[in-house]
Length: 516
Image (cartoon, rainbow, N blue to C red; front, side, top):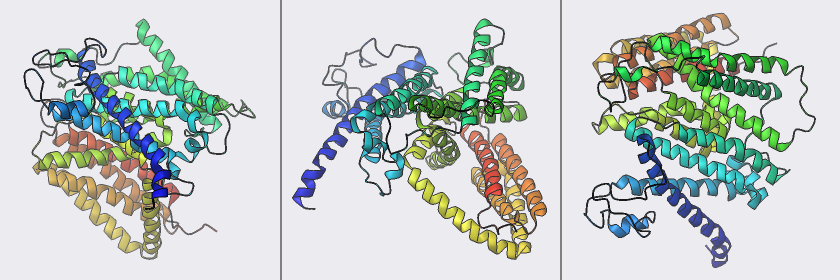
């Protein structure tokens, strides 16, 4: 590289280094939040100190990364080792911040990573700082929830609450400050019916909260602590999950009712001819909040009613709602679909390391949201490639439906047998989780214009098999008291993802011959 090119790229390199340092500072605070909030302690007072000897850390010791290296990973007074997770989290958050700045501001139009920010950040420059604050707050909050969930299997509700509040305030301010421009706003404004539905659902949630505070509606799982084996336990064999889900359904009733009315009335309420940017941003945040929270809460309700056990934690609901509000509803949906595969990979790593199976699912959801945000070009390329391959396979399968039907039947039988034998070991459970989605995909291939009725029938049978097999395997692999084991939750999420993907594929059917 010529020296002139180095000089030209020097300001960008300095900014990336500055943002990395800022992220490392945030990562240091994230450690404090993840350690103190689950214990109900203040994140401001008292100042940081050694948990063993009580030494108050000086400003030099508190420097992110540098302080750890200066101390050589040990307390300056008692010499006790400082866990490496503090250093790793500071580096990780620093890399997240630097990566976000790089993919938003540095790609040139037409570049591979340009679609992450669509040029809005480069176009508005300094005026985009309010939006950058929202994103950085979101990345820091997801990191704090991940560390807290990994350490305690709990997500303090204050973290996603503040994350959502910053998104509801920050994105409209970002739209006001930036003004009009050629590049699209980072959060896409949903269609008018979705805007009205989101507004109605937000009003319904407020009504449900008021009814909850006033005591008209009972709180769900209010007696959960009575079933804990010890006061410091997190999990319990709670026997009344279905009853508690009915309470949560009652809480969601006003939101569902007003959201549906908002959708229906949207046809009678004409949208503004020129919607102000701040209002469009507010609708986008509300839609992301509703979609992100609903997609997990629906799974929580349905799976808990079917299994009579708490299938998903409320912390996961709050996390995804905050993720949707901060990054937009498309990122929330994509992150939800990616999360079970992240969790499955992490579980396999734990299996190889002979680590405990009981790991929380919140970190997988947070990682899914982050991957969906950063990996938008990769996901789009991958989905496009898969759809193209499936289109070719669909055309060929429709020319020989008998062979495709035989393959689907064989995969369904193998998947069902693997699910039935799931109690004999984890590798078979993984095989069931892989083969059942493949069987559903093959069933989609059969749902072509040549024989739509037969194809849809086979697809329905295989999707039901997929759901039943995943739930059965997850139930058999529960280890000890409580429902929140990694395998059970991952396989339930995989089943839900397969159902959603199958519906989308049955509607899209790439490669299908055009109808006359």
